[in-house]
Length: 337
Image (cartoon, rainbow, N blue to C red):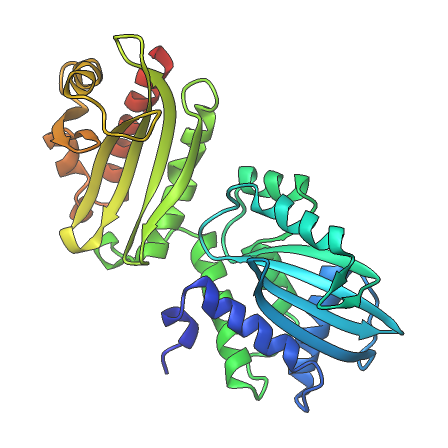
């Protein structure tokens, strides 16, 4: 049977699962209760003997926070705020803002609470910048490794199909994120590509920070494809500044990687043709790594020889060497500008 969570991959789906789980804190199923108490003990640091929760409610998107759990135990009322992520990271200082809103109120829906806990819950490999931002904002972080460990107390079959499917989904995701797939590249799914880029290319990106690259993050479009985006603030030959980005985009339907170099002015409008020309000329040089492309914000793409080496039928050794050559050329250009 197909796993529901392999198809329902959005954050809202995971929000719904977490709410369903916590709302069943008093379920007749002992494994469901065990999962609830295991998560809440870890999230709060409270002892919470089984059966000690006397009241529990969950809420969605209050103050834009993904999930809020309130519960009573030992005559005290607690609040757990959960910011749930799948692939995207913390942005717009949202975690600090959410925490300040809840702590300032000291009550929730007209009822005071004794203590609040803040959980950043992300079913992905830990990102150092993401983790640092969350911890500095006062949130406890849970990534795929920690989530997998929390659920490892459960048997394969709990008598709850929903819980079993989520547990299996987390196990499968953890395995995929722990090891580069040994399947032929043409048979990889997007998570396989993502794990490969994290393990083979991102370490090289980190080595070039902050001297040559400002940041990296994932881009995605409705779950149908994603890209690894590297960015840098650069100076154009005329003295103006702009943003410059390198996009590494696996495209299974096209049988290879799509490489794009994008440039944008600081006011987010399109760069002038003259500015693009200056950047393109300086970037391309002998054409061994990049070749011209002129489409809105895009100024270059991979050279034909590198594009050929990035076809999926060429294998990971060819891909790794070509992608590293591209990333290094982009980093060297940024370092000089």
